[in-house]
Length: 490
Image (tube, rainbow, N blue to C red; front, side):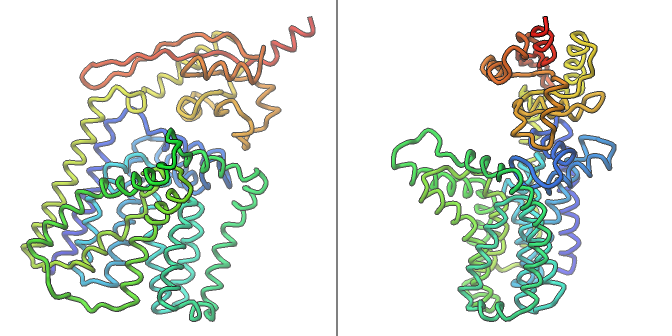
């Protein structure tokens, strides 16, 4: 099987091209991707939801390609390929060449690695950062090179600067060290302290930003994990089971594929030596990330969002090949690649069909036309320049990214939730208001009273590729503090 690496490279290239091209059927980027671009534009060291790293990457890449939306799908696949390559590199520490490659390819049977990736966000970035962190930790732990420990420190900081959930990987690695009785060894290692210092140094500006802004991002985390509609004690059982069930469902194609191959080609005698350190490491990195969410949900009774498991399954393929190995020759490897190719193509067909058939505004919004239409409404109302738009995340970011000039999004009309903008400037400049419901617009009126005009209606249409149309009435109006001042002066 001397050509297995070449086939692996071709598989990754084909997957990258497929998942770069199919999402081009969308008329608009996902809400997460648009939001990340806006974060990169305005938020230097923090946001009200996540740390800033995703914004830096997304905004930089978007500008590099001339603000072409399609480049975001390419960026997403870069992180997927990078993550799978590092899954292979980590698996190669425990498995032979062929088994390590197949373990990496098996990840494409988990929807996090294909169907979910066109919506570029912090989770897609985590697909790469988690296996990279784990790889350099293992190399540092086993061979103790300066380069490995320094790269581990840098990647830990980037992982936490991407999403706070990255700390769960550190819990898994910490439990491994304890189980492997390596605490004393690492506590005497100066390289570990230097790696930790590097991580803290890189994280320091973000920590300072959080301090200066009352740790606002943690309000979002608490809100997202709220217990939902179940108020009885059963929530402590329902939500953790729901999260665990979702992970198994999302990984079902990979699990079923491996179960079939193991039943047909499974080995009764292990092809590799079972080293205790290796077994402990694989066990901790495979089970602990998922179980942390399960236990937190079990104890608190709050919901753990299914998509929080995005990066947590990065070792599942490796664990299957390690603990339940299969005998592989050239023909079996070829068959395995064919089956995984079928899964990837089926996922792509399903995603493409959704893009073609849906009338959802999140897929079928002509963002530039919508931005131009709202700008026209402002121009018809006043000669003052449009500097701010008050809206939800979707319409606020559309105006910020696709307006004809610099328009700042005041999300939910709340300066507190947009600390990167000057409140005085916003209240002096006024804003175009956009709302998707009467209740939302009423909240703006409660916040700013007479400075908010009576709402008007703008009908929008969202049409799929076969002509089916969904119509939606969007409310808009104007925040004009100068009108209140003029009325008082009179």
